[in-house]
Image (cartoon, rainbow, N blue to C red; front, side, top):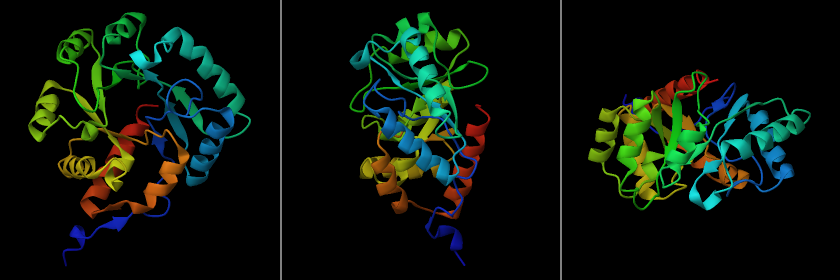
Amino acid sequence: MFDFLKKKVLPDGFFQGACDVHCHILPGVDDGFKSFEDSIQALKFLEGKGVRKMKLTPHFMKEFSDNTKDTIVPKFEEFKNKAASQCNIELQLAAEHMLDSGFLDHFERGFLTLDKDKSLVLCETSYMMCDPNYSSMLYEVMLEGYTPVIAHPERYQYASKQQYSRWKEKGYLFQLNLLSLTGAYGGPAMEKSHYMLQHDMYDFVGSDMHRLDNFRKFMPAMKLSSKEMEALNLLCENNARLF
């Protein structure tokens, strides 16, 4: 009785056939992996867990102003070709777009989208506060047929449950950071992530992997109820449809 309330660790084989839609494994382009060797180590580890497809999503933001569609595409192609002899994970390119003063420049150049239909744009804001013009930026791109996918909304300290509900009403999609459920980003982010997972507010899930060590350290700490596990499995199914 009440087994559905008990928290359990992820079952063996959870990552079998998994598709990751958010990571920073493309080396040397942002605050993620720095070397080809470290990136390959991560890919081999994930392949061993059963991961089969990944979207590499480097940061497009003022801090990494050299990252544009024109500069990142050839770097990705070079990495993908070299990695092909090392592992069998299918790699695709997207980007994580910061909602800052450079966002509309990337819009004009052409977004690196998450999906085959080239309509889903992975977006983020600062953790402490959002750009005052973020809403008008997203409205402008939605007029052109794009749908914002808000990366790791649980991590935004300024956002309340009411804010999340307003975003959903506007038609924004949400991407959960898997490690948020473990407390890797702090208690408030963990609490929000469980709340939104339980209330079916997420649409996709990603690792947002910047370091393999963090993944290894925190994944064993994840414990989910049966309802949360069912919701997480549905997000994984949604992920697969993006490839």
